Image 1 (tube, helix red, strand yellow):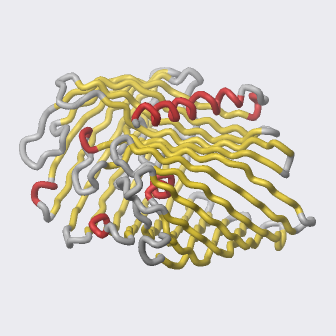
Image 2 (cartoon, one colour):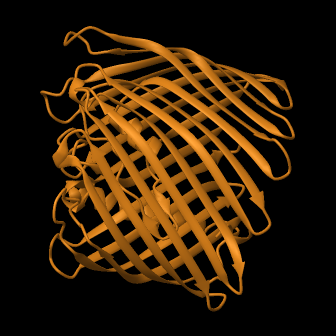
Image 3 (cartoon, helix red, strand yellow):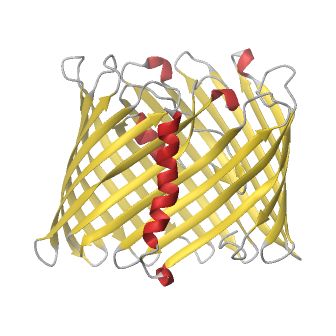
Length: 439
């Protein structure tokens, strides 16, 4: 299983950039850096009592690639590192994420072929701490054609088909899916579009004891933009058909995202999502959101489950931008309600704060604080606090060193799930092309 996942990861990292070699490099924006260093923790396994000290050698790659040519558009983000543990408390591991999206125009404005890949880690046991023994690699690959038929200057019909392959390293709930979608859209004006959407997603699990199902969606969507704000809204209904295995699951579909520049230096973003989903869609949704500087945050708190669920999530974020730095504060909420796998049901509420500031003379400060409370199906509560403070010094256009302090703790009503961890990281970064944009 791991070999298959690794091969697909390698394909995402090699094939997509290679295809871009056929395009004009003037339309390709590539930023990359190599990292090497050392990390030390006082509790590698996140035990509630006496933790194990561990020191690891680290090397890795951070890459951002954006391409927009006449024939190809692509967006590839890679943030992976290899950890070599010196005290053999755990096996050496590769951790991080690779998120890639690719679109090739086969017939200009009519027919295109899309592919995407999401690679990262998820928990094996969602109720246990995120340590090396409780992480597994997950890979979601999807690909298929999109046919766009212009009816007139304002109306168009779009037909899409997609094959998706989901692989877990350890969990047995591997599956593939075939999605078909029909969408009719009308441009109300230059900045506003209305669409009617129908889709079917057939999920087929590898194991015969895991029930296959169809996910059907019917919705109306609206996109609108002005010079200072954007709005995306989709409402409708979705249902899951398990065949003769059990009763259907039905619910409302709401996807809403709004952003607005309140001033030249202050921006607000809001989002809300309510829909029926599955493990593959959840992982692809959250993969790639766990990177902070050159430190890889915990695995996605979602396991492989052969069951459909209703998910609800909301995020409010306020960001202020200054010449010397940025500050962002946000609140997020989520609720996972599985159809029958009730022991996976949970909801959570969290607050996060990030800040970065140029200090002068090549010094930069970065910090992030995350606090969240999770409540599980059995009434258990977990309170989690994660603090990351970083100081970076650039010695030259291509070389810098970063020092990170991290504190990670959980206070759980189940005593053996509580823990405290403190760790430090010293990372050297080599950027062959000079400083990356936005860093």
